[in-house]
Structures are given as structure tokens and as C-alpha cells.
Image (cartoon, rainbow, N blue to C red; front, top):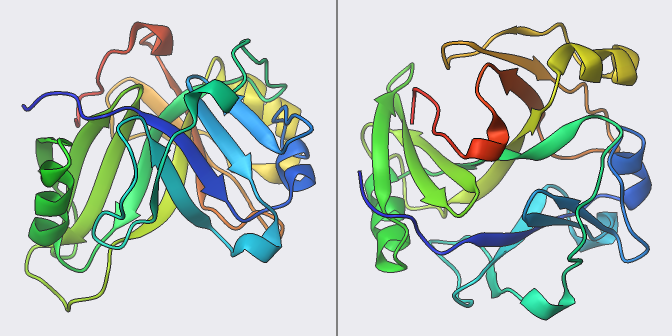
Length: 217
């Protein structure tokens, strides 16, 4: 199963703060939305679209093409934040790679150990790692498909009540449906151009605050 890796402290996204505020996130004057223990830094479209990097508690140095900075723990807000959309934490961050074994080796060299692999679909696998509060899901082919770098892809958020989130966001998210994880449900955000990251919301019978792992991890 491996051991927990260095905590994920910050994720940088190339979107405007107003776009995330429009889907119910509380964002401070510095463009940061604290989501559980992780800072979601909204750097604006000029910073580049999508997830542009992350910061880890153990220092910087890119990991197989993933832009990685050292976290400035003293600069992060310390007070808990309430989000109107009901988000409690980041369940998982998704990374894609053309070479799953190469990316796994790069992560494990930084102490981020693989915990489980799940065969997905169309010749692809999902491999899971723990980084503090957040699960890292790396998606890649069974056999390498080139030498390109790994890249950040999307975010899944846990919410207190998925039906309540759907009501608050109106037509911004799809109909909640059963997730891969038994007992959990999921709904996809209709992001539009303003939000450049694929986003899903999840809730289930487990309490996210307990930090329990889902069945597919």
C-alpha cells in the first residue's frame, strides 16, 4: 500500500478568481480559496490555462514535467473557510501521463508512493497516491505512448450534500449519478470558458473529515 507522501499544500490554476466565486467558492483578496488543507491559487488567465503547478511541503523541483514549487506555509490562511457550494475538501487531483511507470518512478523518487492500481478502460490504468489530505490519481496507458511529460488535468471536490450543491449551482452542474466508489455519487461541472479545469463534485456515506479512503483507492 505504501506510505503517505509529502502533503500537497497548494494548487495553482490559470483562471480568474471571479470565475470560481461564481460557482460558490470563497476567494480571498489574494486570489486564494482554501479548500480543506489545500490552497487553490487562482492566478488569472495570463498565468496559463488549466492547472499550472502545485506546491509541496517538502520543497520544489519539477516531477516528470509537473511544475512543482516549495510551499510557503507561513503565507497560507490559517482560518477555516466556508464555501457556499458546500465543498469541504479536495478528494483527488488527476494527472495524465503517456508513460505510467516513468511518472510513478519520478513520484516515488520524491517519497510519493503508489498505493493501488486500477485497470480503467481502453487500455488505460489509474494509479493512486496519497499526498496529505488529497489523493493523487495518475492516469496512463498500459504500455508507454511516447516520451511527453506528465500533465495536470482535473479536480474532484467532496461536498457535504451533493443534492444541495446541485440546487445552489442550478444548471452549472450535471445530474448527480452513482460514482465508481460504492455508496458515493458524483456530478460534473459545466465549466464553460471561464473555468479551464475539469471539475466534479462528490458526496457519499462516509464522512470526508474522517479521511477514510474510497473503495477504488
